[in-house]
Length: 113
Image (cartoon, rainbow, N blue to C red; front, side, top):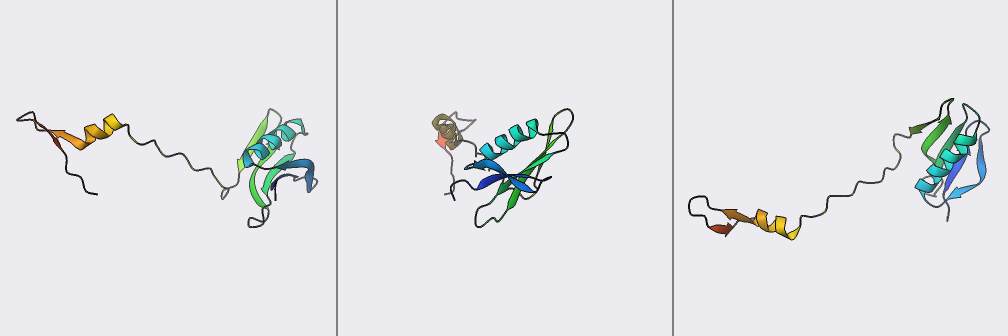
């Protein structure tokens, strides 16, 4: 399926026409735009309709008087945070070397691999 992320109107219980997305981020932005133009108390849901997921709810946007409220699904996919980049060579070299305080010698530390 090329565009598995769809928008669903909870009040009319229908999918929004022409609102199919290939990426979840684009679907959330589309839902936010649709919800901003909707009447107060309307809810737009973002669904993942891939074969393995069924119709998995990723989150819903509800139009309020003063803005839009987002309520995420508890078990929704969350993009994993990037791990910190590995230390630079200079920092790695500093970790690998220890300085003997008495003699002032620099010697390699013994690390387990």
